[in-house]
Amino acid sequence: IQPRKGVDLFISVADQINQLCPNKSIYFVWIGSGYDPQFDFSVSLWLADQIHRAELDERLKILDHSTAYGDLIKRANLFLMTSRLDPLPNVAIDAMFAAKPMLCFEKACGMANLLMENSELRQSLVSPYLNVTIMAEKAAQLIDSDEKYQKISKLCYEKANIWFKMSNYISKLEE
Image 1 (cartoon, rainbow, N blue to C red):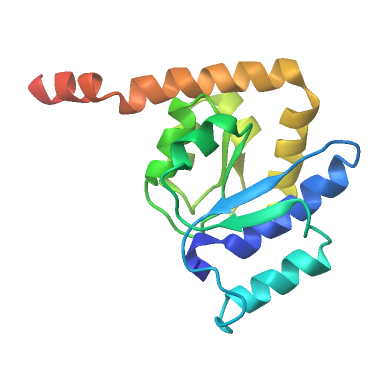
Image 2 (tube, one colour; image 1 turned 30 degrees about the vertical axis):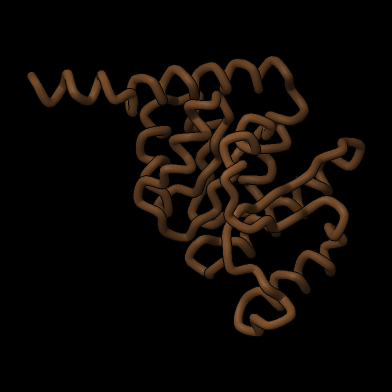
């Protein structure tokens, strides 16, 4: 839990998705160590306040780092990469290999550069730098359209295999 990771941005996106999809039962989960609103007055206290003021107490949970991370990725429908700066996050790669649409900010995440190579992924998953409103709108579109969700999910998985599959990487090195 630190400002660079954009937990506050994640909460803001969750708040807006909640408002855009009022009839959906959507739960938001952040996984990462360091959340302690009782004793951390630098960041955690303010995150807890933001969650409460956004009325997300029952819909948004911050979980400690867990070995169940892989299972949680499989259960998720979307992955929000809300970091302010994260060159090539492994969690984003994991999400794409799990066929989960991975939304991120342009100029904040190295994955955005790859996603922008494909017009469908760019339009569906990449938001302008720290624009939580647009990220929430893109997420809501995926939530509201099963057809679009399935198409983007499949494309994420296909691209993950092209970009990150170790055997492809090794072949390129050997060439």
